Length: 442
Image 1 (spheres, rainbow, N blue to C red):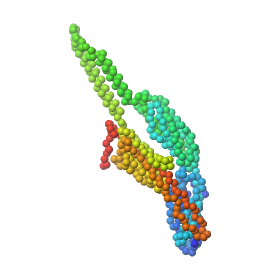
Image 2 (image 1 turned 90 degrees about the vertical axis):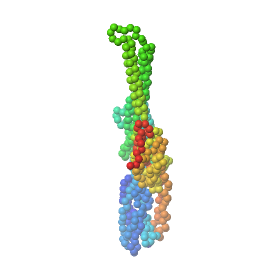
Image 3 (image 1 turned 60 degrees about the vertical axis):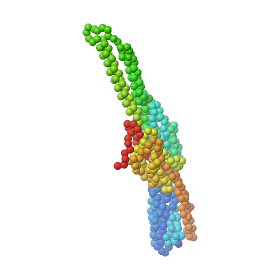
Image 4 (image 1 turned 30 degrees about the vertical axis):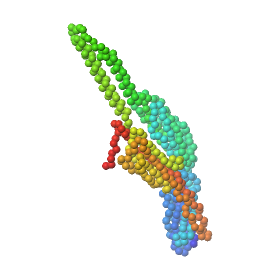
């Protein structure tokens, strides 16, 4: 008994990210009603949402049946443009040795895309600052990428320059570009100002992408230093006044008394009282300024947003972030994105507590415990475990005489895993007026 089957696909070029429908026809050339097991083989088996097992198809003797097979091409830089061969294995239920494996080719087209991300979301300085920008070609063809950078506000007193503005990247390739931000109008004193800086990425046949970071312009003389200088000058002036005043010298004696008005002794006593009142006011003012200085110098709350990026392809299976000194982190939300074979797993930990352990192809957002608050020197870590999946497929028994030969086993699935954990929260001081207690579970 032999099996005859035909697999056809549209001749159009399919861009990754789009879908197509393949058509399979199976003929029953035997004299009995037979059913055929259908299984998808080749590259589509490794794509997301693929269903390798297509079920069974019953066909009456002398007839043929047709089924439609929907296939979605992943928008992945690993999917190279050009012809892509796949097949469907058709095996008879009545005679397992009767097998047909019809093949078809999908014409994969090119797509262009790029991602850009600053290394730090906030930088600062009174005169200048530096940062790094990571650019990745997420398309499936070599592309020329152009970068533009400028402050978001037209009146921002900044000049931003890139070390390189034109890059040629292969599919999946990354590049790091340094940029320098110069302050055109430095502030001698005053309050620090935040200036957003926007980076644009452009390439042919693709939409423009952008990312941003913030430059915090600090004054040359911070407020605590300025208050300390004022306090020192005030103390020196007060000391000089006391030194040259009668209070600091020999007490005068009144020898005569005028005909009208207070005596010389009373005048001196009145002057001494004024000097004492002035000294008391200066001391109270200095004490108040010291309290204001201590309060201004205390650590303050800071918004927190950090992306942990782990990638086994670039040799960084573990990404870590250490909580800064004198702070603890109140985690509000964790968003996970990942990609890789079904055998890959990611592990997200905070201060030794494991928040997530999940396959990279079924990632999900993480629910954060209300009391989770790692402290200074404790770490947030994202780790990838990306073992190689079983290679090849089961060996097909030799077909009966006259039947077409089976194709070679498909290549092993890629073992590259990538994962990103976007952690959002708030850095809270451990001590000082801005510190807060960790609230227990309700």
